[in-house]
Image (cartoon, rainbow over the protein chains, first blue to last red):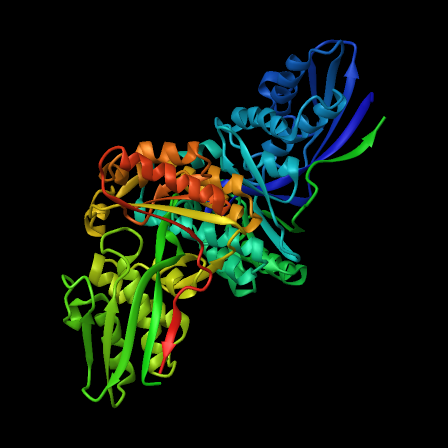
Length: 309
Length: 309
C-alpha cells in the first residue's frame, strides 16, 4: 500500500444524560484524509481546507496522532497526510475526533496494521487532548468502531458496542457559532448533588436498557440530563425553543451534541427525523441565526476506506 | 377468597454502583403473610414472631400498606393479617420491603385485584417510608415483580424489568448486627464530585449492558461503587477482607446489600456461588462475628401465593 484515502465520520458524544460515557457515529458527514508514503521521514500535514488549522504536526489533531504512531513503529519511510475537513471545528459533532480517529485508522492501515482497536482509540485520544485539553474517548471510539459506543472506563480503556435500534434517526442542528470544548467544560461545577447524580444514573440505565430493548419510548423518557444540559445550554442560542420544537414535532428526545453548540434529536424513523430537522431549522430561520442541518441514521461502520493505491 | 397466604422474598437493593436505582429478588428467604377477611372493619396485625415490631397498623410496615389500600377500596369487611418474618429487620436484605410488598400483593388479591403493579409498588413504598423515612422502590419493586428491576425514576414511577443472566448466583453474608437505614443514609454527603459521578454512571451503564449481554466479566468489572460503598462500608465489620475474599474465591463482584450490614457477591454458577459463600463466612467464623449465610439464585417470580381458601 502506497496511498490510502479514508472517510472519518462526525460523531455525537455526551448523549443527553450519558455525559462523558457515550457517543455515536453519523452518516455522510465527516473528514476525508489521504495518507501517502514518502521518502522523507516523519509526518507532513497539508490542510486542503480550513487552513486556519496548523500544518505543524505537533499542533495538528491528525498530526499528533500520526506522529505518535510513527514513533512507535519507526518505519523506513515517512507519511504525508492531506486533510479535507467536512466538519467545522468547534461544531460539537466531533470535528477533532474525526481527524484524530481517521488519522489513527489510516496510519494503522498504511503501517500494515500493527495496532488493535483499543490502541487506535488511545492514539486518537492524543488528538482530543490537543484539541480540548482532555483525553476523552467518547467521540473517537464511535468514530473508529461505528454505531453507539459506551466508554465504561478510561483507565484502563473499556469500550462496549451498544445495539443500534432499527430506524433510529438523528437530526443535528448546527448553529454557525463556535463553542470551544475547553470553555464549555469550565462551566461545569466540580461537585453535583447526590440526588441529581442518582436521577442522572437512573436515566442512563434507562437509556442503555432502551437501546437493548429497541424501546423508543424508554429511550426518549430517559433522555433527561439534569446536570450538564442546564449549564451548557445557555451557550446555545434558543436551545429551549429548539428542544421544545423538536419534541413537539415528534422527536423522542433532544439534547446538546458534545459540548455544543450543535443540538441533536432522536426520532423513530427517518420520515419523522426529516420533519424534526425541518422544524428545528425553522426556529433559527425565523430568528436569523445561521445554521446547518443534517438528518442521519446511526453510522454502523465508522471510519471506512475510500480508496487504496 | 376468604383466606390467603403468600411468600414475599428478601431483596437486595443498591446493587454496587447502582445506588437507589436497582434491586433484585432472592430465592427461599422471605416473609410469610396470611390475610383473612373479618367482620370487624379495618386492619388487624398479628406478629407470629419478631414481636418487638408493633402490631398497631399505622406503626407496622405491612399495616400501613394494608390500611391505605383498604381505605381506597372501602369494602364491607376488614382484614386480619398474620406476619411470620423470615428476615431480621435491619439486615439490609429488604426486611421491611418483604412485609410491605407482601402486604400490597396479598391485599390486592383478597380485595379482588383492583390495583395494577405500579400502584402496588406505590402502596408498598408507604411501608418503606415508615421503616426508613424514604419512599424508595428499589426493594419493593423487585419483591413484587421478581427478577432484577431498574427504578429509572420515582416521580412518576418508571420500573423496567432487566434480564437475569442464566446461572447468576448470589452469596449473602449477614452479620448479626443492626445497621439502621436511616443512619446509613445520614453518612452520605449531599454533594459528590462530578468526576466520581461520571465514573459511577459509566459503571452503571456497564452493569446494565452486562445484564443484557449475559457478560459476567463486564458485570463484574462494572461493580465498582466509588460513591456510597467507601462511606457505608465502615459500618460493616471486616468489609474489605470479605470483599477481597469473595473476589479471590471466584466471585465476579461484591458489594453492600442495601444499606448494609449484609454483603452480597455475584458469581457465575451456583457451584462457585456456594464456594464464595463458604469463604466469606469463614472470615466471620475466624473473627467471632455472628452471621447468617445464604446462597441463592435470582428469584424470577417475586411474591407468590402459598395457599388460598
